[in-house]
Length: 283
Length: 164
Image (cartoon, rainbow over all chains, first blue to last red; front, side):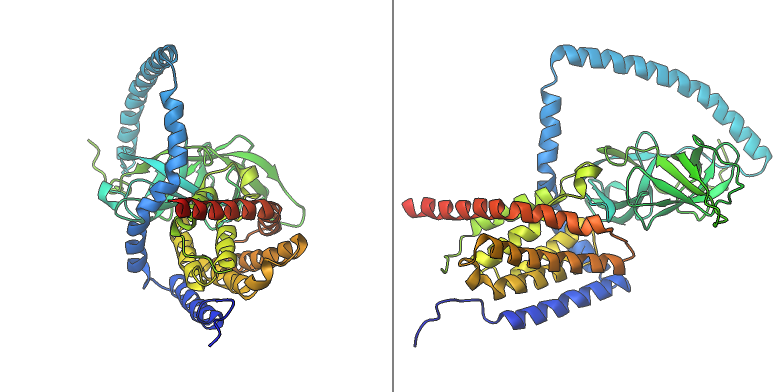
């Protein structure tokens, strides 16, 4: 019998049909329900080394960068950080007294609530940020105390929320993802709104604000704590642009996130447990 | 042309492509990021279809789903459809002119892009027009060179093994 000149696997059409059906079934079950969560968690733990490998070039670059800093620059950096530390700790002390005063007042108002949070320091793994989906992966997981649903911050403001916690790493969604919405209020006057992502990490939009609302460019937005997903009073964004069209009762308000969503490599994960201690007794 | 299975260049190229696919880029470049992983899968489909078949492409797609945290099966489905086109036409591919090759690679990658974006929409995301067409354009601009590099690596690897 003559050997075929070309070998194209056993039967491409059969393979095509089988694997298409298999993928479609996976998509369907992942979209409607939680049957795949266990499978996903297992596979994701197995795949973690690959994720670390993918992250390797970025980490090497930053390591080389740090290793090549020369001595005089280190000394200079050290003294600058010392000065900064001193400044921050003195500021913290004055904030401490404000905190006690605030707690005192809140106790009088019978709504005492602790503003102290604990954090877990985490590092970003290879960011898969296409503009379609603003998701990140961090190198701390449920073994380090990260839980699904906790908030993620950098030094400047709210970054997002952990969507899935695996044993060694977690997935988080950024506040700039188009499907993400954060209940916020204007720090100046308590005006409430919802900050929705746009898919661009330098812009959020505020929903359902009437044209007559008292809001100005430069206003700072903090989380309102409504809905219970994010703890209250975390800084989120500043208002950057306000426009109103004549045929809509709502103003078009844009805001710039305070957190460096595209740049931060180190993030803080809010430690779960102390978030909604609304009945906190104070100290 | 039936090639002997040479896993090393394939695995290395796939891991490197995954890195290029996922490495963080500034916003302005991110939209123009070429479809590294689909391009790599396409190359192996065309070069060694009896050995890197639709099942292999599906597996790479599942890996990409897990790596990016998208719906499980989303990229796998796109990979399977793209690979089917590639494997149907792999015999002609080596005889094609540059323009015909680009047309074939372009159609395969377009199918990938459309299925991927269609499932994004089902998942509630709304990718814009630039997010569909710009990666396709940069991928096609790179394709002849990328294919050349992978071809070279593939040949070279074989020569190296043979010498030993």
